[in-house]
Amino acid sequence: MKLTNEQIAIIDQTLIDKGVVYDEIKLELLDHIVTDIELETEGSDFDIAFSKAMLKWERELEGVNPSGKFAVSRMVKEKFSKITKNHYKFSLLAVLIFSVLMTTITRLKPEEYFYYNLHLVFYSVYSLICLINIISMFFIWKLKIKTIYGRFFQANVGFTAFNFYLIYSGLNKLSNLYRYYIYKSFFLNFLEWVFKGFFFFMAVYLVMVAVEHFRTIKKYKLV
Image (cartoon, rainbow, N blue to C red):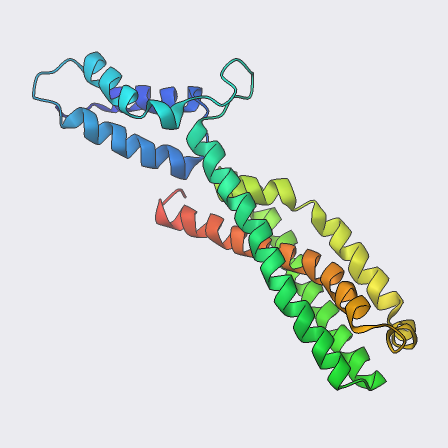
């Protein structure tokens, strides 16, 4: 059977009612459900075919808080959880490698000018990453297109204010850092880079999420 625009609109609204408010997930599910219904034998009743298709996708559409006002589908929650886990996995792995590398380099090159310039480059790149996140936040807000990546970005971009505080604080103390650095052990210097690096790579991951948001918009032609 070939579905009418009205029938497709009914499916679309049903998905929204079940907490599928993110456009790329909704379009993906809509395509699957429409295909399932249209594969039914010619002349089948739409309501019956629709019920069968919804039953097939019942688990993915099951509300994780079905009695609550802000219920979302299991599929949405699982995708959001996956992005969150990847956020911390990426940040932790990247910061460990980065911190070992930076601590080793500064131990091999203990000169004050090198230490100062290395931090200056780090905070400059850090500032650029934060600026990109602010610009991305503006365009995500302006486009008003809901994707799971856009939602994650909006939920975490507030850390940018703290990132700017870390940058300001770090640059302010830069001239005094070296005198403390030369008396610290390898481990303490490693921890210093871990602290700075963790928030840095969280900001980097947000840029990656913003890129995925805009890539999703282009892929599904949402504008």
